[in-house]
Image (cartoon, rainbow, N blue to C red; front, top):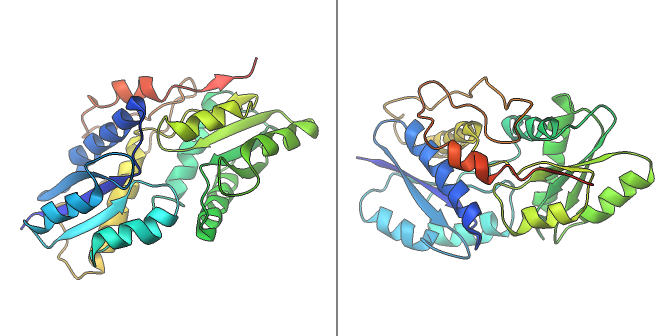
Length: 276
């Protein structure tokens, strides 16, 4: 019987954001264990909506796990996905995770973050308290992984402090500011982060192959709790290569993973910028 991983992103009206998500889906399909099917789904904005994808998958198999392509817990993970799943296992959000901290550090270094800069970890924000806890944990992981300067957390909406306020506070203390875009793909929140006017702003996370490692880890752990047998092939290990200093985009793929999906996402998430 084929197992199904439903990879559920938020959804966006921006074409470049949709392309990044689909590129990540390509990564997941290229790295999927044997007899595991990866299905595309969204919780908001546009289809295929997760409720419809769940219904279609249930008609074929009972071995289904929903993995949110969301960076933190929030209303969508705690309410919307629970309602759509109707008892199916739901993996935790992608963050917090050490690999996300690694990707974020690669992104800020790629745009020129230096020792002593204040890094503003710029997240979307949520009304759910757990989301703030998740972002704070990622900030701690970045610090543990050797961030070049102090890290403060800030949010585009719903939570405090807001990103422009955090940038202004750091600048008032004489620090150069680097906004670390803690969003998956270009879209509404990446634009909010850019408008915060930090001295440097990193690109969104994009279709980095290290995300596949997190997704398969989440799928494996959630599926294990159901008592399902182990997959035919093991899930991929984290690639050791990191993003080159000259690029704010996706890291090189593992040797066994086709590179065809990297070129377009690289162009789409290279929206890092410097403040004039």
